[in-house]
Length: 267
Image (cartoon, rainbow, N blue to C red):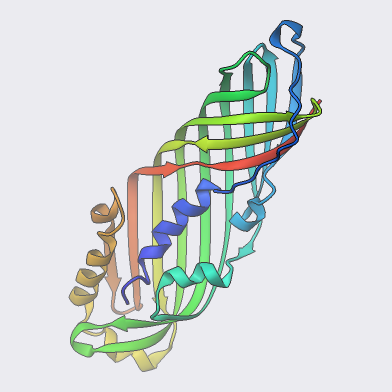
């Protein structure tokens, strides 16, 4: 049972962060700010499909070294790769997990160098994010006095939250038109709500294991959830013996870290 419930909370943070990497060595710089003219860049996160959404971005360079940015993540149902499901632990078998995410945000970007839309920058961002996950797997539950037994489980996870990011990054220009935007560091402070549930769908053959197991299941899951930084000991756990499910809920501060890459075109 250990590690079955815990990854549902870790995956929420992992996917909302959109962590990717990339680079390009063919760089030509645009004109300095004294030749400034307003411009717009349309961007896309090339690896966002792997995170359950299509991530788009826009940047309006409305005055020298200053831009307003916009971010939109459109949900796309994505199946988690086999390697990712391994984080659920050795006692989890045949996991099939699907997820999708939606996000919208806006930021104000301040470039630190002498050129427009180029070089290192600092950017505060306000955003709203939702994340939904559903998965089926075979897992082993420890029912205390009833012993350990394998069940067919349905796991669901829902997250929604508002947050602010203090993002630092660097943007390059290729041939004065193609943008390569690399987010280097972006600590986040979010106020969010997380709800995760694991339901036993094995059938009546496991009914007897749930009877009288409420206290032992609650204690076991609370011990596992303590491994989650900041919020682990604040997650409320509910065990329902009749409907055979375990639920965890949290509402409050959720820390995060944003890092990634977008490619775009400057008009």
